[in-house]
Image (cartoon, rainbow, N blue to C red; front, side, top):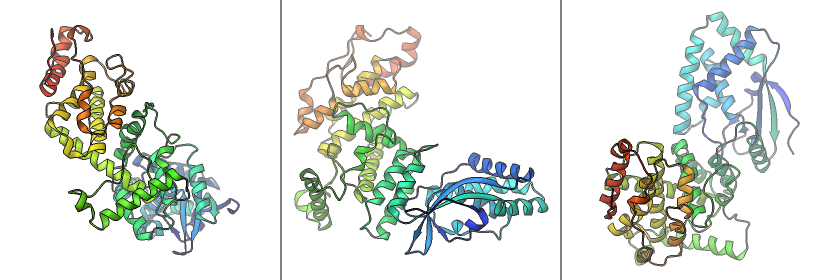
Length: 441
């Protein structure tokens, strides 16, 4: 059970040995958030308020490090520590001596610069007064939980209120919870790789790539990804012993052993992938390997498209959405059959299917992409290419589904000016890369 919430001063709290657990997300407060905290405290100090409350913090005692892990409140406490250091260089706290990942270091550096500039505007007396006020008159609600399980429950519940944590942050904490039997070194290594990945890109990757891909082939909507729609990415837990889960866990272990012992050389030129987008993932460390595997594959295919199709512009939002759909369908095909099967004919076929949408519509939105991918759009009604690829046993089966040649008379009527400025470019690129012409344009 947790202890009763207790109101303590910032000074008292900072005398407690504090540490950041592996499951914590990066420090991400921006300059605006840091300066807001500064001005809130400064206003309370200027108005001589006897007490100013600065939120809450949840701590969990860590017997190994003999310190208290910060379960919730890291962003605020790190910023307070930075402010104290800016007011008095002798006020360095234990939090500022923690090891931070690349993303956290960048935010710490930016906020240190912001707070330093604000503090430089104060004379010596005011600096000293503000420091004393922050330590002795600013308070925080302290909650201590007894074990990691309870810590995660608090972590998830606290972050379900107010500003919601990014879904991939919740998934990170969930899967670290499943790594109880793994070493600290392995956890740390994975978290470092995770933190060193651009977090905004990672958030977009789940929303625009992984979530739609694991939905579209099932004929399900790929829109609306949020923290309420992460159940698929929680995967199969270690405690699940049903037949299907034992099968998938065994398959993962078997492939890992083949790769580790170099037995794969008998079967393949390179290590065998243990992941498939159409199969459930395994909870714990394999979630991180799964995510980073597909993230790196997406980036690789993105560069391949840039090199192979240099004339494809990445200008407006519609262009970006269509280009992303192209990379998504390439990724789904490669996931099933491998990169070696990306022949010129496959490229042309998939390009033709995707860019039929671009030349047919003046404006493309996320809803357009979703309907088209599911085969619900009037342009390709009934053709869910993701579902078809999932049913194929060989790459050549792709060409059994003939694509109809676009009819210029059915293309959306556009003004001559619009045609010259935009649509002509789309159509010329489509004819160039698909190898198919359009009559009567």
